Image (cartoon, rainbow, N blue to C red; front, side):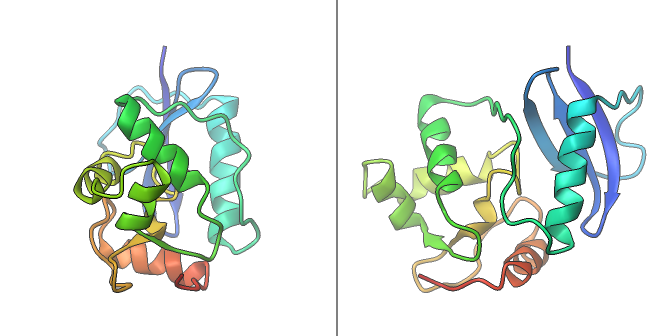
Length: 154
């Protein structure tokens, strides 16, 4: 059974979903997008950590995550978790981290399908020239998150 609850944050409304044991989704949503909301203790913990992160008081999350996707997507999302707070990686660097330097586009697609944005930091992936490209929450949000982390481009 999935629980979902919507929280007001500095980024706008976000819906956090869990399966009772793991966070499965974090999405930016519109008012009224979800009905029959159920706030679990896990979602409340995730929201608290998100608030702390957005207030600059947390640089890492301590949450059980269970994103659903293909094995390749999961390998990319795992590699994203290895990008340190305050740093970025290019799509090519992430492709190399998952063992296929030619898979830049596939890494981009996996990034695009990341179901747990922010907690799995796809905002830390940038173009090879350091440019902000693609983000499910929009480039303004990506910039806001990178500014919050005072990113050092690597």
